[in-house]
Image (tube, rainbow, N blue to C red; front, side):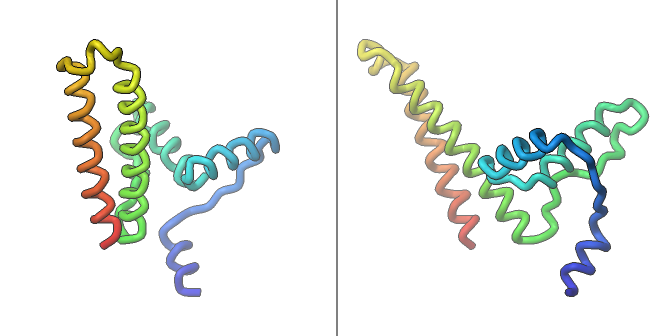
Length: 129
């Protein structure tokens, strides 16, 4: 019960009428991306405010790091993004022709993948604390 009171004191709710197909598509994409619909809407609102000349600088950050749970969630999202970047880089390095496997281009791709591995491992250790 106390958590509900705190939630009401910090956040505001509003109702929006949407086309059902749009709503279900949005809900599905958010679920697949493992992000809350509210966070996407909040980020959109903050971004929209920043685009308005009279409101610049008045937007509240869409990223709220006030609790450990939220900070861990953000770290989890960063890890997922880094893993996606690493996967793309591995795909790139896998497409490098054999005659270039000993070149600086390949070496840089491999070094980049190694750095991403290190970053992911460091963030995972932070996330588990």
